[in-house]
Length: 590
Image 1 (cartoon, one colour):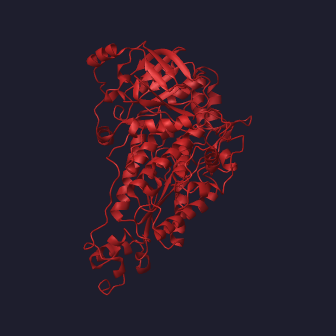
Image 2 (cartoon, one colour):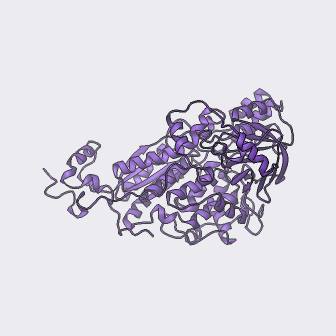
């Protein structure tokens, strides 16, 4: 554990509140309603992405407010603030999706700025929509102050008139079904009105629920909390517990986030993703979280865990059940217990409670045999996600195999320079069985912003061609994507990756069982193409996208934008009075 004093009471905020030289600072804080008593307390930031832009964030305001009660109960002073979120649900399929992955960095950066700028002693973070979860976790690890992450929870499904469950994925794939004439416009409208009936994130094992599970596996969240639906009042009690727990960590001097983020806990997170057929996005977010702790964790590390971890949970989109169903049988710990009992989890890693993961899991049930199987009788012997490598993707690419009927594909390349070009062809059904649809120039730098291709993949699936064609891109996929879809191809086209050299009609062989993806072209031919290649030119960039394109790193390392492992030094002793001087010293009072 990090070498810290037994108590971290006011370990940061004393730089703002103590000593004669901080009279103006205290005066400013008194204007916010603080007094002598509260100025002497530890200051804990409570940050959420609460807002009206997405149902994922709609429930976070009341939850964050209850965290204030927990901080106060523990003897601290809570300070609430918010940051931005970009809804993947409404940004997909158009230029707005460029802003989604970028928002992960902005969230982490903005929380760092607020906490360091105001010298808060601790932090409770709340996330709801996809990139808000890794963004908050990255901020916690970067700042390394006493912290707890709380997921806002997922929505409950809607229902068809026949009683079948519906989610947003039903509507997205419904668009493809309408394009083929399988359903009428009236039926599509009825799906639209019944697919998302409450606040909360998407209810399947898509990116938000996957990353909430990662939070528990890493030890950054309280166990058994990720699957509680957003509309359950239980979440308010959870938020209060989180606030109180931060105060206990301050009192005990740990554990701090970097005590929790180790190579073993990162492997636990990957195992949880693989065991549930979770979102491919997690394979990029986990290395980014590792980066904040100064740990190099690449697609290769992710691949090793995916390969050795069995798929044990039957969760949507590759399976049948939703987060609410997993919650009924005990939540994420049921999955983790299945892995622990099967020898696929490091039980000695530390959690935010100060107890090991194995100690915490002892209070939860094991697999039920229906939603979650025992590791000895899995749905698939290896995980629900696979990292593919080969001459087409030397640094790796990702495919979700959960639910696939075949793990091999051999086809002809149809090359598209942008997502829009491909979407036009798919909407017109101008493609054939056996095609490998290649969408390039959509990586972190080339996009820039690495857009998700859910609108394309869901349309293909909705048209009934989910496994008749394959799709390869240096962009991303949604956690809701299913079918023979390979994304995150690294290096990306803009970085000189071989995906930039693919020509119309090239043969591409995909073998998810062997973990390979091969372009049928010899090195001499690829060298000729590379010498003749011209970079794809997008429109002039400015603003946030311009800055992002200049800073962002490669996909297989997490698409991060700084050198990692930030050091936040304490002030020199002669700059800030010692805690022992206290607020009530004779030099402080007028």
